[in-house]
Length: 183
Image 1 (spheres, one colour):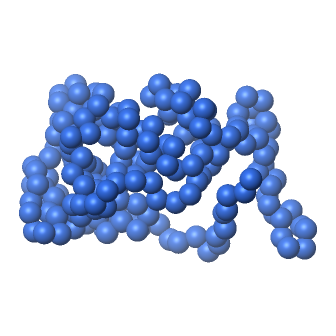
Image 2: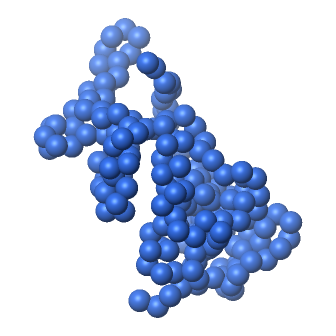
């Protein structure tokens, strides 16, 4: 495979994972993160079996299992007690489960796994992608690149996705959920 020069915008879970996987394939990966000091955003989340499989293939599953809590059932009800969700992973396969994990734990594990942390440029908000030249422009007006590939991994409220040809934004969900950490 030909070595490519790749820019990743965003150093969240997706950006971190991509930086590791693409670097392992010997690509020249450069990551741009708008936060002055990159770190986890949010308290925790539930890794599904597909995410656990990716971490296993990356060789990181044992570390993740040390920091997380196995979740075998998701149950939700209304204030009146009517069940609105009752998902048991064993209905899919006896060995499947989710993994409750603090974002900080996963962030640290992924940061330690990337062999080229010097290619992370923090405090650099990318505001424009020139798809014709493969370059990106930061908020200070500096152009970076050219890159063979630019990946916008800058989150759900991405300002770059609309600039990439052929990309459309999905509609917002008409519902939501509240999450909290409990003992």
